[in-house]
Image (cartoon, rainbow over all chains, first blue to last red; front, side):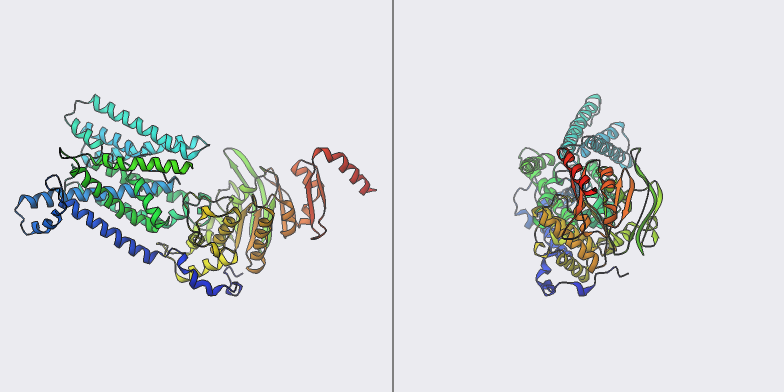
Length: 354
Length: 274
């Protein structure tokens, strides 16, 4: 039996094919264009991020940036290339990871409002990380592993709570996340107040989302995160199909359980690694995927790379604001992202209700 | 030649048995419709046949090979499913949704070739959805959305198409439009159709064979004229029915009777017997 469509049966509209061509999302060209544009944006953000800081608030410092290259012995050179650059790199990687993490959770829970911070996953990672820090175990693999365990446990509880309530699944998921988030907050405060640790100030600052502890020694942790990006990019097409329903995805040849599990573990792992490095930076995974989805559509083969580059640029920019806004020392970057992200979240929730 | 055959399959959810040693055979290029009361296990049967749910016992043969021997991707190239609803939280364009049907045929990175666009275009023309190509799913009517999902299924180039109540929640004109489309796919493109329907009258006019189910078992299977027997249907559905002949199509016509007409119905049938 011939299982293929026979060409003779097509209706006489076949000439229209050329007219209709642009209607498909052709990923080759669009991918190149998006990567070029957002890559340029990231390069610009990183340039300003490296050039500007508490000692030089003038954007024109960018011009001086390259001049310092010729003078490796100056303080200027040390500040830019030894202090700011690792921090800018950390901001870029954290932003990319959090933004991609948000995108993946939005697919897994089929809810555009899902985000690691809102779901309490970042909070769970923080509980795990602080427990590790207070126990004095080494940063890697000790603290990173306890953070991963904390976030997986939180995720499991949130999913359990949300699946119990049949009616209004969307809201029950968010509610469960908010509850777990405040519970994690309480546990963190409890742990901190019980401890006599001298690192208190440091831990509190880290909690609010802090990129200042960036040092070149911790950047190799990102060797663990890069493969996560690759795994998620390879699964971009099944992610598209998953969004139209589990049953439909299965009938299109997607092994729903296996792929959901891989995505879940990959995303949770990379988000908890970032929490270890930069503390609680919220809403990046909400703001960036949302803006990108509005501009380039819901195809994840484009959204995954775009979220990486867009999230990286965004957090580098937010960190730049955090360092230069206040004249009396710097702000934790988490405060900047929350000030931008929370109003947007409320707006989205309000619009979803309309 | 059989497209699908199930032999003694059983399936239970949460300790409750939904399918009881059920057997069936669907011929190639056949228009096969499953009917039965709510809770009969129709949707579960469809899930078992499409391997969305695992069966506890029994065997299913799909195009001459045990279903369990196929990989998910291989299965998706042979059998497509049109589920009852499709989620539209993330509004994909119609063209891109239809193109998703190519998934099981693409390589690791899932990049489409010229041929894939061509097949998707043909699928949209066959379902009369080409003019909707640039619209997003959430901006379509129920009938349009159903045709788009069928287009996506055709795009898979399956040998058999499973549909779970594709005409539910559609008005009369759209019901006929969907059924005509399915009949055309079956007769012209030689795609075997296996669908669930709550509309016995539509089923009678389109199906080659019907399968009547109740409580996870087959009550009857065969040509519509045989299965749509008044006694059999009344027992299965648990209500009084008026079964007569559709003067246009010559097929059976079934109408449920409210209690207030049961007395009148008995008079009619008594007159008929005399």
